[in-house]
Amino acid sequence: MPSSLEKAKQNPDSMKAKILGAARKIFGEYGFHGTTTRMIAKAVNIDISTLYYHWGEKGDLYEAVIMDVTEGMRQKLIEVEKIIKGRPLEERIRIALDEMADYLFENPEISNLTLFRYFTKMRHGSVLDFKVPEYISDIAYSMGLSRDRNNVPFDARMKVLSIMNAIHNFVSGENFFRPMMQVTREEYIREAKNTLKFFNVSAFS
Amino acid sequence: MPSSLEKAKQNPDSMKAKILGAARKIFGEYGFHGTTTRMIAKAVNIDISTLYYHWGEKGDLYEAVIMDVTEGMRQKLIEVEKIIKGRPLEERIRIALDEMADYLFENPEISNLTLFRYFTKMRHGSVLDFKVPEYISDIAYSMGLSRDRNNVPFDARMKVLSIMNAIHNFVSGENFFRPMMQVTREEYIREAKNTLKFFNVSAFS
DNA sequence: CCTTGTTTCAAGCAATTGATGGAATCATTT
DNA sequence: AAATGATTCCATCAATTGCTTGAAACAAGG
Image (cartoon, rainbow over all chains, first blue to last red; front, side):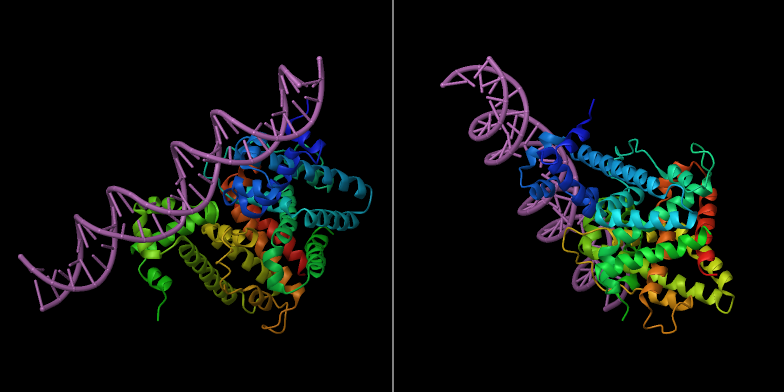
């Protein structure tokens, strides 16, 4: 049985999917409390009651957004794992960093929403602590940091967390850092990737 | 002439300072939009109009909070620079990471508020883009990544940003990551420091 | 005690926010 | 065309939010 979210994604022109897309972007920019349902409705040019008709309350829509970006990340990670399979470690790291950085710079809401979830409390005792599949252990396994996929050591998971967050930081921080650095978007992205490799390649060689 | 903020800090028992302290913590946990003036007032056990009497509107209080934590960081960085002066590079890095991590784990609002500023948009066209002294260049210089303190190259600033953010991530993310990792606070902090050193020591040797 | 200035709070206002009910529109089937 | 179900909007609600007013409590001298 396809979930409500899956159905919405099947037809990207459907109203439900359009709302989800706008919600993704706006929740990502302003956070949960910084976003109003009216902001989302306005972005899709609909009445707010139409939004409620499709997604129910704000928290439910937010939940759907989180599930959506998480699923996107999972897909991308599977894709990357296929590309790097069999290559030497350093090359694997370089390719994986490039791929993930490109993907996230194209979909910065993913990084925004992820970091929001990590760092922010919810006023309404976080109904949003629902089960989100974590892929940290999978990445650690894929990087060869653990023999057992289901029992990845603490330090390996912390390393993966550190790497993923480093990418998210550069992506989410672009709006703040780039004016600070006074560089173009292209320069910024290139240097962000270089910096990621600078720390990661040396660490794993 | 001592600013409003400086006066408040002179006497930490003053109502103004107490409000600032509570605001620091709560803005850090919930973000600007997630925080209501009533939440802060309640934490100090005062009426909300007393808060307005001392600090004026919400945005001004938030601004004062940002200035306050920024000043704290600046002081700490000066302190750390004194400690590591003259030592060999690797030792300097290890000590600096330990010191900063300890400081931030004791004052997690600093990391929270910093990351918030980096990653979140404000609905009200960010009156909060006021001038905040950035110390990224100073750190880069202190690490020997640049000869000229006033003209630090792009890649050096990106490296420093990456390091600082890595620390902030572990501090701010504790509430999310620690239950995920199922470790005690002590274990978490120790491993966070280890991970920071793992990436940084190898990169700069 | 009285005055003067400071600090506090109770009450409330206007705007915004999350959310709903019901009428109108649209699409599909018969 | 009539009937049915799905979708959309208008109008509105109650609660919350940022913020202000005016009066009370407090402090310190004279």
